[in-house]
Length: 189
View 1 (cartoon, rainbow, N blue to C red):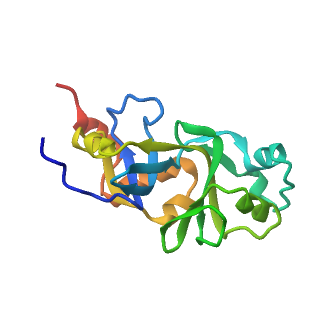
View 2 (spheres, helix red, strand yellow; view 1 turned 180 degrees about the vertical axis):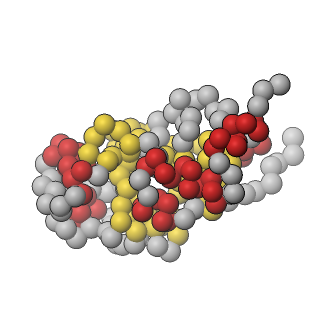
């Protein structure tokens, strides 16, 4: 078996193809935070769950004082470790457990970022998800070869400045296509 061409999709969006049947990923936009020979880690960024930041902070005994932030949605980040928070944020900052995705975006899993947000000293922009999407070495490359995903370089404006329901269409627009067009072209044999 020949090894697949090495591709690094860190800081890319994965757009689920209409044929995606896995309910965890159907119609999702996933932001890849890390991709290397150990596998890949991403966060689904367009699937809000029935919980707000205010409710989550209450559960963590943190007082969230920032007006408007309490109403922000919490997201389903993926099927792995769904009891754990994953915070995508801009700027990267200096939290105790942060994976810098690129110069201005980080993924943090430590509670200190939430404490800072509650105190009004958190990052300028953030998206909090419960759980993440993970791929073992070569798995994402295999799924790409099976045409399960489209990929496009991520734009932080799509991550942080658009409502959840507009993120997938906006990422697809980066490729110059719409979901309706994609469904028509996917077709059936």
